[in-house]
Image (cartoon, rainbow, N blue to C red; front, side, top):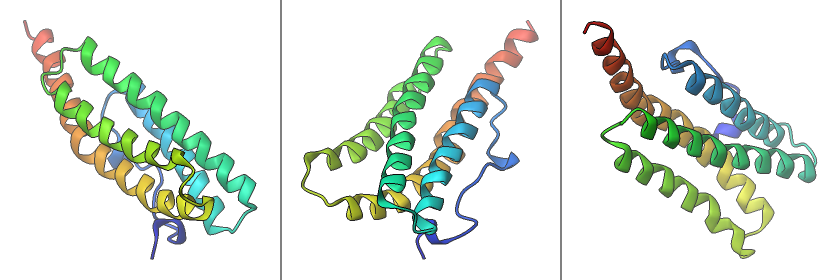
Length: 144
């Protein structure tokens, strides 16, 4: 069953909170956009509606990843390069569909699987590791 067909595939839950308000707010918005796209697919909305939701989700993906990288750089995150590699791979995955080679139907099906899975995995692994480091640094700064 693809995430687009599963009512519980993605949605904001408190266990996705990282304790970084700006990042959490962006993740909440991002998840909402991905959910809108997947729900449009699941509900068999018009192709134009589905595609518009996908474009919006992909645009915000680029925006959020840029913001997150700036945040990590500002905080001196020591694993920034590794984290950026993951972002770059996701962006590469998104951009490979701009060639015109793939049908809209294939692109929609692919992203209804890829986006929710990658997003939840990335938040729960790499982003969580980054947040724990940033919060630990802040706590150390408070105790000095």
